[in-house]
Length: 45
Image 1 (tube, rainbow, N blue to C red):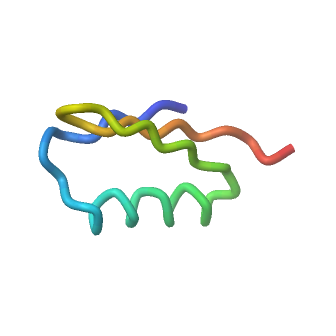
Image 2: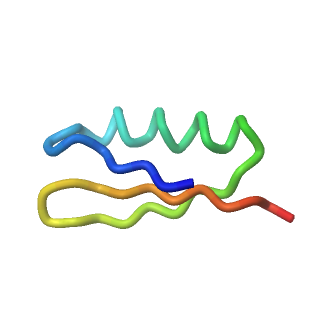
């Protein structure tokens, strides 16, 4: 799964998405871009 964050969200918003991904049993991978962040979610298997 790939999640593209809106431009300009704060660390708090990104941390909430990462927390939810972990709660769903996935491993988050955050990629920091110049204008927005992308979060990949990979299965833990």
